[in-house]
Image (tube, rainbow, N blue to C red; front, side, top):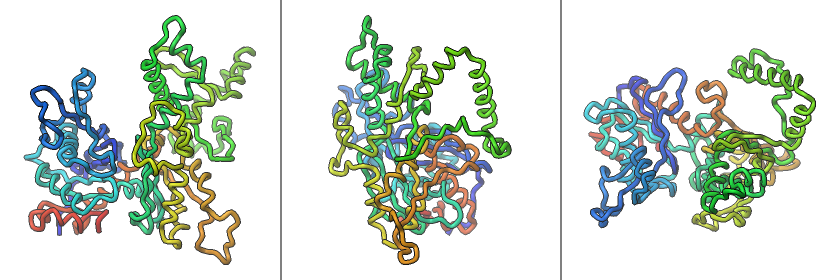
Amino acid sequence: MSSASFRDSTVVIIETSRTSIRAGIGLHDLLRLPSIDIPARVGLRRSPSTSTKTPNSAKVTDYLVGAQLDEALAAGQDIIVSWPFADGDISDYTQAEALWKYVLFGQLGLRRAQMESPVMLSIMAGLSRDAYERVCQIFFERFNVAGFAVLDRPMAQFYAVISGIQLSGVVVDIDLDYTDVTPIADGFPVHLARTSIPIGLNDCLAYLAHLLRTNTSVMSTLSPSESPLSEDELNEALLALARHVWESGLIKVLAEGEAARDLEDEGVTDIAAIVVAGKERAVIESGMKRRQNAKAQPAEQARAKEMEALDLVTTEFRGKELTLGKERHRFCEPLFDPALLDEVPGVQKKEPEDLRRPLQNAVGDAVSKTDIDQRNYIWQGLFVTGAITNHVKGLGLALSARVSSYILSAPDVLNNEVQPRTVKTLRVPDYFAEYRDKGDGLAGFLGTSIVAKLAFNDSGGKNYVSKADYASRGPRVVLGMSPSLL
């Protein structure tokens, strides 16, 4: 058992998802954003001199990671690109080691010979015991960390949003190509109920790019008749525009039957709340905008009213001004109706094909696989996260409206205390100042930071593995001394 705690400034946080790795060093009173965010991919040069080298025979030092890989790809080099975590497991431990080594020593600037930092690693749920032991071995024997602990990533995401005694819920993590659904009951993931669907952010981007082809204004601006783009160039431009629209926060998702609320038209009734939330500047700018509109010429006012009625918006893209309509709000439709992707050219078919189903069905079926007396509590903690939620608000509410078929429409409270009656959505609280207005996609890193602050400050040392623990008991010790594996 460990007996020493670590200084907060030395603690390293690493969040590993299917397609990205976020990391940072140091814990503070205000938990900070990750300082590193890289794609979870590696590259291996394929040249005549290394024609026989394959990922199976490559060494850690053979792989290109981060900026090196980006530069090699930009230069058009022949590179084998691999994503070792993309399948929801660790497909190649050498590639995983190369990524974590790049983060620790290449980006955070740590030194193996003078390593004083413990590491809290959050990673995909459902790994085998052998996988946890091997990861533990890599961090101690290859990286020489001072302490180590593993946390299931869905639990880290859930810890970032719960409050009080709430210990049950369901985490919906929308990644680039896959969406993972993890029910949680009484503080533990229900592994038998976990599921994934082969739909993600990339499918939404491809679908919006497909819809933008119907916008004649966009098409004529991007590919004018006097100098039209080739089909490949047009596809690339439309995908880039779709990403720009998403990253600019121009997309809204409404729950079924829910009317849109124009927040700008609401009166400011609680000045203190506005100041605490850090939104006073936005309120002032909104008021100035209204006064400017009031002084505008009648023609300008008519144009503004027309754009508002049609829900039009203008955006600057590659030096050109584009006007977009309501089609941009259909961005998330493939999540709820995957059949829409059948008509979109270029969408990659992902395995297993038979698991492609609407997100609301996947969530409802996952919760239905839990014990019947747990379901009511699980539905009180629906949390939608992933990169898509960084720029699209209201996705949780939209999903909660679509799972209504799994909720009693006319509950008999007196005679039926088990069947779920309502759905409650969760979000990252505003009191995490650094994460305010950043969306819910960083919940995994925030939750990992919270657990690290508790685990590594525990003088009893029951929730992490120290060097002494590892030296006396080996990699197996991680199975009994990590937050996820107790």
